[in-house]
Image (cartoon, rainbow, N blue to C red; front, side, top):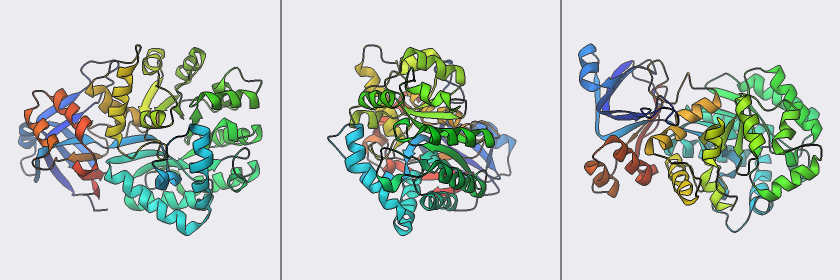
Length: 434
């Protein structure tokens, strides 16, 4: 991780969404010959290069023309222990957990193994342009601490937490409500609010948490007013049936979490593929967010996300990769998959490249409660950005060269750019990959 330059002008083509394109058609802001004035790790000015240069004639210029600068990607749902099992095929959610994911998560009980995966994980985030992430930690406190330490050393901004379960899963992944309370509080005290880290209370899902465990989660949120909350919701029809069987008093899946005070503006629920109208109303009223994971939903056969219903109900939505049920760390790939799946259903949302960039950046910052810090290039925010430069002679280079509008250029980037095109990634002005 490099030290940030005290002050510099970065010149390139710049695209970001400082507004919500679901509400504002002018949300995409572009500068073909643009500039960011970066000082002390923050963005001071964003605009046309000529104007910013005139206002700051003595500031050194870093010329990155020939590529594109986008805000750092924000992944709102990803599992740290599952990096090494990407690519499991042929199963639905519950079978995939039993055969593939949970045996690997048991291995996180060995600190050496967990530490190696933690370093691989943060490197994978950075190399794919993800600068901020809401991460499912491990069922083991030591492994979760190793994740926080690796992310801080890399310079990434993450929110994560000890994964809490006391039923259904392999015994090695169980904890007690008392131990969950004590270990979670210790991790909060050590990491929350330090070095860009934030704690997220993380029951795996209602099916693997007793009422006593969910009571502990609610108590943690009440005791710590600024920690986040994350879990799974309505991912798979068989899962939903089993949750309602385990909690017969619940009107729907979300009602389980509501009873214990877990649905609020700090809450991010992964998937929500099979939401009822009542649940959408409740999520919107609470200001909660949904992490949409299109690659994972397709890979596990979970279903196609009802984007239009969520947006129409006023529910905040962002994107997540859901590694390792998802197919990789690329948020641009998630954006493309989101677009394609919405095209397949009669009531799918009509998405433009601006919508997709927003879902992969600013929407994630809004969901995670860090929109004042990151997500776009509004002056005063952190200098979190990725510099994409296509290889000479590549299909992406040809598409960018012939793009007749900023929207077309962005669509080409979303369709074609992968990790190989990411030349540089910065967080708070510091180089974390490149």
